[in-house]
Length: 419
Image (tube, rainbow, N blue to C red; front, side):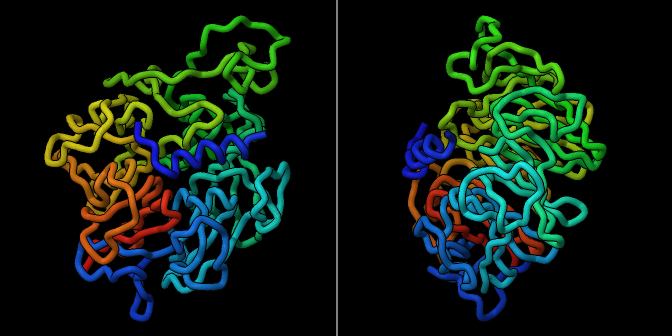
């Protein structure tokens, strides 16, 4: 595995923390304009890790290892500003940044709170629900939180706030999650959660009841002893069961290798689980109800069909950046993270230092970055010649342009996809 400046900084930070449209005329693309289709340009973030710039233009604001961006019903971009423990909004023209949630102090809020007074502990991912509320994977809080931007209230909707595993069959806010890293809304209206360190995908129905949708929590071999704080190397004491009587095993769920094809009940994932791990893979549904997810540690992207069959759609299980023009399942990948369905129907995903895509014929290509070539150069030119650093998030705006969260550079960059 490569070790960029971001990855090195991430381990130290984690250890300390846990105890619509293309820019209109007048909006500059700082660092070089996106003139041609396929060009990349600097859209947000000064490139200096920090916190500043609220009230000013996006390309002059400081972000601190941003993890995700999503576009709201208002056309604005909502940025998960990971190490600032905030959610920030960028106006559709990029002229104004403002904080919409988070006090900036890492912590947790047990009950309902006002958006600007609540505390987060490294949120990683965000999606809007059908009612226009923003749902957050509050990663180090081991909770899912919902932000009502109209009322100004944030509430916990899943997780009891400690790293553990229990509660299936009961209310989600009485269940335990372990580093939930991503959320996705299914065609059934349910909320799906990548429960990273439990190696599971959980489902929260419209009735608020949580269940395990996919994956297996296979525990390490460790003696059952009620006096144990936790099994050595683990942060939790349970491995399933209901909230009222969780299964005591004093063990952690351990990662597994790829099993493809498999079923969602038997599949194993490799999402990071240690105290200083990185955020894991994310998920997206397509129009046919297939759930695609990044199996990050296994270096593959996989699909769960509506019938429960699990197959690999990208990656051969090896770590690398080669393979453009080949069937996607023959190409090595570098730690895939975010996944999105593009306006062209192709599957897009981030890897270390690049964005890659798989077309309808199953052929893989690189869309942005050089994969393993780290830096920040290339704005104003072809996206495939640019240098990126630890790309975690991607999103498409209403017009079809691609936004890349260049996490290691604390910036967001835009790839022009329309004339």
